[in-house]
Length: 121
Length: 429
Image (cartoon, rainbow over the protein chains, first blue to last red):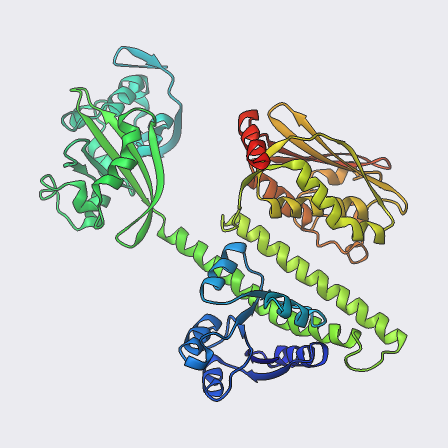
């Protein structure tokens, strides 16, 4: 499984990369902004979009909306990663077309498992 | 006791000493039954004896009577006119404006002479007659004396207080008093934004710290010497505590700001108790403490948010476990006390010293100077418990004897048998 991960915090990027590659055996492409993700996604079709919510510039939901405008990405599942949210907010995130939300701080040992469970695999 | 229209009634009055514009000593009075219209009236001490007549008149102020409703020497109209709250008085049927005070005129940009032909529809830019009647009908049919509501008008937020008052000639009038709360609302918004920013800014580094340590402990970076593992585990445990503290602070702030969502449902409390015991099993094993279920009464129903109530139970049970001696027992019970359902959690630990009992629900209070790092507490658990229970219209109390133990009681309003029967019927179906 190949994941496009958008996260502005480079340390969190590194943790997520190690976790997803080493524990989950996934491959991963990382971008540090929504704008960079839009450019990078033009010539790739990942199996999952993993998006931070609060980023300078485009937010996660804005990035997802723009990514989904690309034909080859319109059906790719998406998951947000963000700080603690209320149940109502999770509903709001799902309405933007995401499968769900993974809460930060996430557990790097079980992150891959959380993702596969959310994707129903 | 005053007399209005031949009927005697009690009025609650508040009086503040002050100086009238003319410089004479005066008292500022307000009557609680008409507090909704903020009738702060200046009245000199010489006329205090004429108070009853004054209050009676102020309850009955028809437009024509204003000039004569105050005791001699008291200019009620200009007093009323100068209130900082905005006052709109208008006919209940035609909604034609009969009176606007200075603040209301200033808000609308109207002069004293050009508002009497206007109606309430011109006061509110997005006026809808249906919505307006839905708001005011309870005043006309007498089911409510006063309606208080937060509204937005001309992009500012107001506390609205609406009443229907009948004048001496029998004419019914609506009296709307608007208090500008934009500044308070803005302060609340800034506070919320700050909390959410702090939450995000603290969580990002914590995500990296916890993630890095988690990976090291998982062996992702190679085998760890035992001493190094012990040290990383200490760091990891404390990072976990920091996350819990941030969560608790955010929960408390959310509840205080009325921003926490409560998904209320009528639920069997025995189900919540059972779920809470299941969820805490691992923790109680770690401390070698048994959870004993004693006197769980089935069929007790309260209106609760199950997730929040589980948070309450988890906080109380984990506290009881932490303060129990190794090998000890924590007892949980569910009983009915008339209209109240009571969940009790009892430990047989050291108890709470009498001197510390009063502060137990304060933030960062902890009994007997217990080492929080050792017990893994945040110092906020009981504050969160209290805030959540009170948001359910319930109360939380405790009894404690030093050296004997402590019992915490969560009292929740019971749902009536009829509605509980409906739930049961629904579940059976």
